[in-house]
Image (cartoon, rainbow over all chains, first blue to last red; front, top):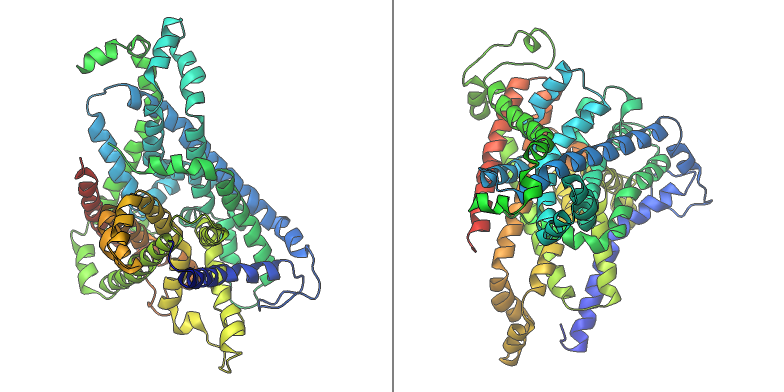
Length: 271
Length: 299
């Protein structure tokens, strides 16, 4: 707002002050991550080294990174593939009961995943799925209402005239979908994929319950197990591990920043 | 009418079988989700356990689990903790701070805006467990707050997570979640027409009056939407609190989600745990219905 200069300068100082407070925990994180002799306290490192990072990508820690990648990429891909196959007919056909189904999806999306935790665990235990594959399937199930609604909204924006024109030219359903619908909603599909990816990358509760051995932990559970242990905490290692774990989620956002508005528009649910 | 629309799209009508087959996996998985929700209700009437004999030979116990919710210690205390946590971290912290930031940064394209935006976004983008580790370490006895503020001022170091557990997780959640409210309010304020604000300014309204009397009433629907969204999310939020305190010390930070986890998977009372999740489903379901009604109203 264009108030008097003194007022705006005061506001600027207040905002800058807040920004500094907001990022201060990160300064701590970086100082410890690059300090081979980190003790957890806020100190300028005597020497700077990448030892902590080397430790955080080897052995069990490295395997946990791969586990997270597998779970996140698997969940995102499965959700998007299953979602596309159902969202296209939902968008194009006036199926009887479609609105009731869409409202069901809206309700399911809002229900807490904790609500179905016990049956989910029990079913996975019975089916021998207390492993990474089980996590992928469970997360896909929990993800699907959200993915379906978003994808349907994106397909709704593809003009049907283009499909009609392609049909007149003799294109089959498969060609229409792969040559027109998917390319035209590419940005939307990418946003949905990355939403699902970061969601699964972040997921903690399900892998905590489903993972049986340390080598099978994703990074969320690995980090929790490491800093939850009482006693000597290896701050340097954990700081480096945290930076590696956070990097994809933060990076994806800045990569997709321009497309995010589309994504947010899709989140506002329309029946 | 609906038939006519379908007839106009022959590539769809002649491939109904293929389209139907394509929908099958999604319908199946949604069906499984509904089935699990139904089972959560069914389990809540049993004495199912995680391990031991009761994990195989469970039996129906009627309303016993639901009686336990209200007669034994635990549930009501956790509900209260959750309400306090949601009220201070989401409703007071995130939305007020998010709104203030959005109002202060509105319209400016300065570097300050970019810097502040990126700073609060970082908290939001960070995985929950990294945020938990960061705040555990920041508030530890040798951590940032103690070594930068408390000890230089001449006080002995404070063990924040032991002594002020609920305020610490509340502040951590404000730090983590404010970006969402900020983004939503930013978009809402951008939709307020400049003319209206200018007119108020010409009429002599102070900046505070312009915000309170002009902008707030206009974006009221956005405020309501934001409130319900963050209320529902925070109500069921689990990782940050659990990783920082595990619900402790004692049961000071045991929100409903943590209580559900502790009962189901630490103590193994899956039947009682299901009763807790049913209670949570009912509460969140009611909140969602309120939200859906508000979404429908503008039409």
